[in-house]
Image (cartoon, rainbow, N blue to C red; front, side, top):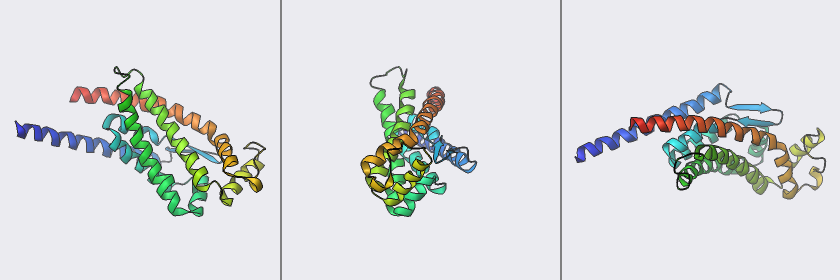
Length: 222
């Protein structure tokens, strides 16, 4: 009996690692083919969080954290303009807080959100969509807050935002000469607002649809 239970445990862990490996491979394919990041002017949208959310939902918070860490690595491998500026400003803080910790934390919280919603949404009517939406929101919020709190007073960030202000991308009230954390915050929100909305819509629809199908299939297999 004990041998059967051990065998089942090994099989379950092997299956989980295989599924995690597949999701990591998908993320790398999205990255190297250029599909995962879509550049629109000074900002970038990403669908890299879709497989990470799927993993967080189907495999749990730890898998979500691992996949979030993979997301962070892909960000470093193909930096957007603002991330590049942050790297030039302070590479250590950028890598530790803005890339690694953000990826791990958002991925972990994605899995915890889905688990928590299960206590309320026992039939899983809306848990998938809510997890996808809130994960994308958490990622954008963490990026904005991290940029403001850690780099909000740095001239390089102010200069980049002022250049965009000169192109009338940002509200005309922003000016780097008198910029503070208080002015950087609404400027970043104005800059990534549309991007964040599109990302949340994509994550909500795609990750919820894929994760719902996978969980149903995995439940049948088990």
